[in-house]
Picture 1 (cartoon, helix red, strand yellow):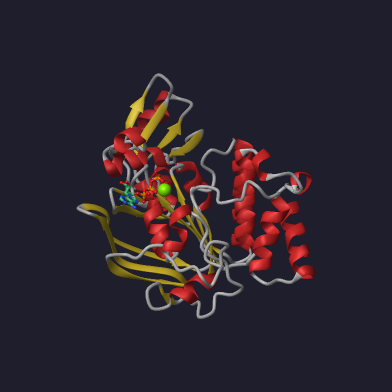
Picture 2 (cartoon, rainbow, N blue to C red):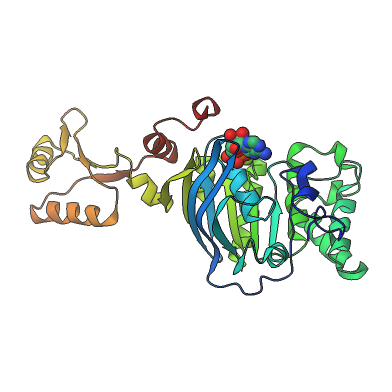
Length: 346
Ligand SMILES: Nc1ncnc2c1ncn2[C@@H]1O[C@H](COP(=O)(O)OP(=O)(O)OP(=O)(O)O)[C@@H](O)[C@H]1O
Ligand SMILES: [Mg+2]
């Protein structure tokens, strides 16, 4: 259980209202877990007449990174809060580690770890004391607790600052400590709500490495982010959330392919070859100045194979070939009709 949810006297969701996006819990096993770590169907949530989640369906296979991508106010934290049992949905169902979030709340909490959007570390304690607190709450005992804490401090590059008060930590150090605290429990499913917002590029990369390391060990990550490159780098599946609805869902490559603009660019050395290629490749656009041919397509392997076969058939040999796919920023714009910015979400 988390430091917020650990005391038997506390009851959720009231217990976490003061820390609203804080950690939930981190158990030692994910009993009852199947190949699907998280399954969500028709999830709905409204505050008054404001619909925040308007029927969300998700499936997260165990041992993968799933990224929920969306601008400010899209409903990312609300989704995380529901799946981690901090708040109740108005409708729909969700199973986490094989347990229903409503009927099996306790089992869900013991199977997961959560790092909330805002670092939930105690400023008046040192980094080591924060970690010890969690280890004690989890009853790891002095020997094992001490070992786990030391290992985590080293792994997160915090050993040197371990005995300084957290109030003297930088934002990035707090974020790392926060994640380290989530990992004390060795959870198999971890929710990270915007784990790298506000981190410098180096700390972001450290965090990414950490996430990859955990997933390589079989951990399932549910990651929210506003950073398109982050989802692209880490996630095997991405869902794009916009105004409470999933507007797109797929692998990073699949999402990129849904956006117009994918094309193959062929470079030739002579106009004769360029013209020959332009004649046999339907829909292509030739540029005689730089001797290139632009071939629109879906950016996929199959269409690339077909294109190369067609060129082969006519014994045309381009000097160079490059495949251009739009980045996730383009995807967001194309799918939601507005860019991924706070202003646009209003
Ligand atoms: N307790 C609440 N009462 C009323 N409205 C709320 C409450 N919590 C969230 N909302 C509203 O729900 C919507 C979604 O909020 P949420 O925090 O889930 O967005 P988010 O995608 O996490 O955004 P961000 O990227 O800014 O963290 C917002 O419009 C927000 O104002
Ligand atoms: Mg949020």
